[in-house]
Amino acid sequence: MATLADSQLFWVVFFLCIAIILFITNKVRMDVVALMLIAAFVISGILTLPEATSGFSDPNVILIALLFVIGEGLVRTGIAYQVGDWLVRAAGQSETKLLILLMLAVAGLGSVMSSTGVVAIFIPVVMSVSSRMERAPGRLMMPLAFAGLISGMMTLVATPPNLVVNSELVRDGIEPFGFFSVTPIGLIVLLLGVGYMLVVRRWLVEPVDTTKAKTRSRRTMRDLIHAYKLSGRARRLSIRPGSPLIGRTLDELHLRSRYSANVIGIERWRKFRRVMISAFAATELRVHDVLLVDIYDPDADVRQFCTDELLEPMILRGEYFSEQAREVGMAEVSLIPQSEYIGKTLRQMAFRTRYSLNVIGIRRNDKLIETNQIDEELKVGDMMLVIGDWSQIRQLQSNNRDFLVLNLPAEVDEVAPAISQAPHAVLCLVLMIFLMVSGIVPNVIAALLACLLMGKFRCIDMESAYKSIHWPSLILIVGMLPFAQALQKTGGIDLVVQGLMDAVGDMGPRVMLLSLFILCATIGLFISNTATAVLMAPIAVAAANEMQVSALPFAMVVAIAASAAFMTPVSSPVNTMVLGPGGYKFSDFIRIGVPFTLLVMVVSVLVIPVLFPF
Image (cartoon, rainbow, N blue to C red):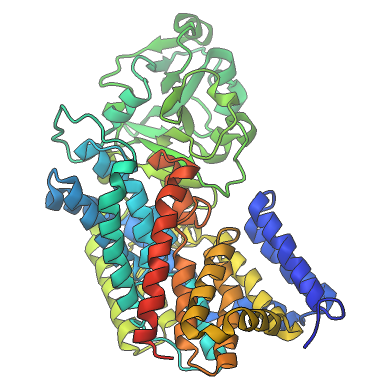
């Protein structure tokens, strides 16, 4: 067997250490690190070009991309909010019932989608439900995250680690898992998780004072207006003949720096009627245009602004453009942890120019930043209130590389791009599940047919489909897959397995299962659960072969341990996404997540050998 000193194994381990350091420091994007690894393997001669790029042709990578598209179709058709309505109707005012139904619903939907995708769908639902029931979002966000992670244990296609482990079995000529092979374990962990959350929720965020009962169905624009103290900031100004604004674009005028004025929308006469047009940076103003303006500085001299630019104040009905809700939208937005904009200001981002939306409020740790928002460096967990054209908000919603739209107000239902196609989206989802369960066609073809039908029924269009795919996640998988091959090729797998055998080999296969779970969970603290599965799956199979027992229980424990990323907010994107909306601290996940991970470990070691005998 090769040793570190005299073989290419040294360089494989070196590359792995560098990758882990880069993942931990987060100085370089994870997908960029993955691409660097591909190049390093080829240049060093450890892998050939076909071997290093084999991940691009892996059917599981395509399947994961298609599942992102399915999730986007469910968002665009408003199904997420309909699920929220059902949760509230079914739960009434019982937080206990709501928590149970929420975790069951998330685990159910997550059983046919990636856990990251389903949590991204349900975060706005939880924000909405929390508002309706007057509960702090933190009471439900961690149960949501845990249910999302547990959903990865429900079916074979629920999460990428399951598919990675299954591919390793196929690669070694072992009979792969079936669609529901993991389900019995998942159901046990789900029931355990629901019971656990019902007990520990008292240590989460305290409930909000509920002295007033709410009768509305969902948080409205008026609620956002009050939360971000926007009252009194709106103006409706008509451009008079001779105004210096005529014929110039918004980008040229610098109204924000000169008058603390953001143009939110523009009313313009067109064919004998007034229509609302989007306020893009390149929009050229015309005489008699009516500007919807946000004056964010309370000391700004609005009268001087109107005098300088020949503007005439007009009547503004409703509070802060709430009467224009069908044309002018609002949404609460947060940066995802991997966003390139973390640490940058709105001015540095050129947010208005790039996204044709205005940030009119920033909340940090549930406190409103009221001064100099444009030059405030953004941090993980900040919530921004954006306003502008609904179509631009939808485009921002699809930009899951940088942003997560946390809360769309109730008015969005009037402008949902495909809300009438919700029954068709459900039909497509049911068809995909049926095809996957029956095995009539391969899983990737089943998902592809569902996506094509969603396009046919106009549940989703091509632009939103492509934007919905979280490409960094796919590239990360593609870049990490060659690691397993490199470790196998250079003797690294044999080295790790021999170490495990020397340490616990004489103690029996159950102790080996326990060791694999601990090793997998430990590695998962530093790198993603998918990358963990890529590294651990071949080790598990090799360990089983060395002990001359079935590889199925060893592979299954890796799949379960990879999904059991409950211990820190950076263990999984699922945890990171709820960190800000839930108002959690790093220590909250340690207090709640570590004990639950230990419970899952015990269940796995006891149950897996019963379902998959050695």
